[in-house]
Image 1 (cartoon, rainbow, N blue to C red):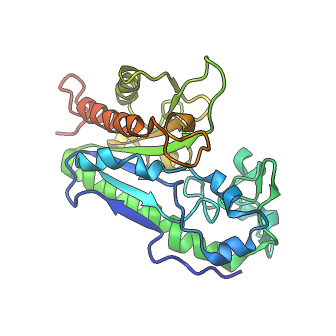
Image 2: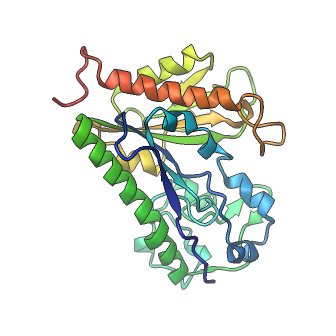
Length: 287
């Protein structure tokens, strides 16, 4: 299986010199499905699209208009998941089968949602056949590593300029059923990826906007927050999960009446993070 790579697997949005130390990432909203990828799939494109964090890339526009930078993936999650470790691969879907020592076992991988999704609930196997190892290597070397290098470079530049850098990793989650289910989930890897004061500021912005919020349950943050969040070095990372029914229509594919309300929420969270970063009482930003 040989892919025809798109010209740019991800885009940088926003000014060259951001006005804020907050960087946004959108790793799961890519919709650039190549013909070869679709032909290799045993399920239709509409089913592959359910892997996406549908239209989250279009929710960050207000934050970008306010002067923040964002890195947005165009490559779909079905091709490669940027929120997984590059070793988080199902060995049974690769030919030849890789050395077990090179594989990072995880519940997500075993559940079919590793670096390259292998199975979906209700659909079974995604691909018609096993994927050649050189194709997996191509995706890692031309998509996964460059995206994470770009994130690291942007965060380093923000830290150099502002004395602090904050990554807001933006995702959406399936509609949550029940009044006791939070509409927004913030993930800080159980207190390890970002200063607690910053998480509290983000939670305050969510509540002020009229939404219920939970921390780390059921989403504590993935590979992106784990890799890039180093609060002791002044580089923080927070995962944001938004209930899709808040901004999509009943089909969960097209924008719904709450679309701009969520765009405003994301911008408000960014403003709250920035404000807390420079709050004199806490001194999170380096002098």
